[in-house]
Image (cartoon, rainbow, N blue to C red; front, top):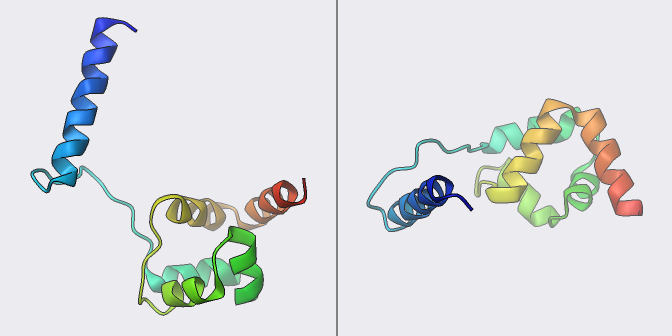
Length: 100
């Protein structure tokens, strides 16, 4: 690895540490709210149990997101963003992966 790339990576790691310690605010954060999760699910025409099974979470977790008691984070938030962008294609792709 080139020194310049290493220094950039090291700076990113240090910045992440500062964010985790609360010393610095993140530049951006994507949060999908409760009502958004319901709209995303409804665009797929799936029931709560079908959608929860599709994305690999419990029905209770999905209900908590939809009722705004909890918010999806990390990979779940990213997956919901993908489904929101193109529900039909995302459902096809996820279903294909789960049947392999």
